[in-house]
Length: 240
Ligand code: SF4
Image (tube, rainbow, N blue to C red; front, side, top):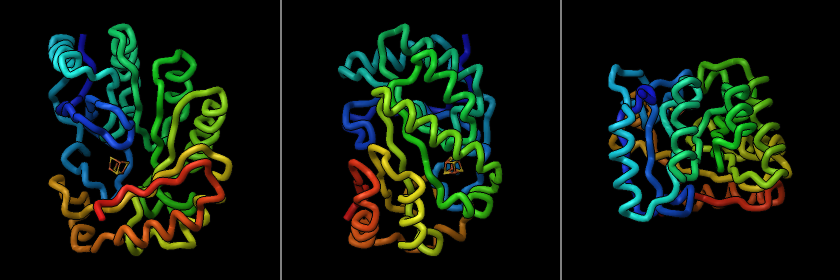
């Protein structure tokens, strides 16, 4: 069995998004084109695929390190529905919990995975206000984003774990955009504001973005104050 274009896996002792030791699988290929993407090395789908044998080796290492959670990330995993279906089913069969990172562009995939209980936790990127999506990502079917948000919120009310998250990039996300995102997601459980990191190894999909500065952590904490009443929990992920 093959599980699709997965370029690598990384074992992390501590993974702040999931708050427990996690093994991460990165799907290659994405249908968005965020200029600030620092997974640009994963943006194109390559030929290499993760086989059952390869996955078993990853899971064996995970077990030896007491890892019980696999984070399926990317790229955009929901672009490869058949492979993702097989992968999440296999992971659950092997006794692992599954966290899915998604850009929310395929609510029908998300819905199916949730309906069959193949995902335990989802982290959905909110790239900006809905009006900003075409410019930031090149993806203009914002109804799908809205549907994914509603689906995640609905499932969250049934006890499913989730978070929404925004990587705040100077020149794209200011206080008014963060405020509007807060209004759009109002009543959701958890929102994370993440620091844009042009210094990370993957570079930027649009190299011009790598010339930008990050917001200081203090600015992100001020953004968090602006939306704190819209969520049960607002967290900031920043190095400072
Ligand atoms: S940051 Fe944007 S382009 Fe990069 S993987 Fe995520 S959704 Fe795709």
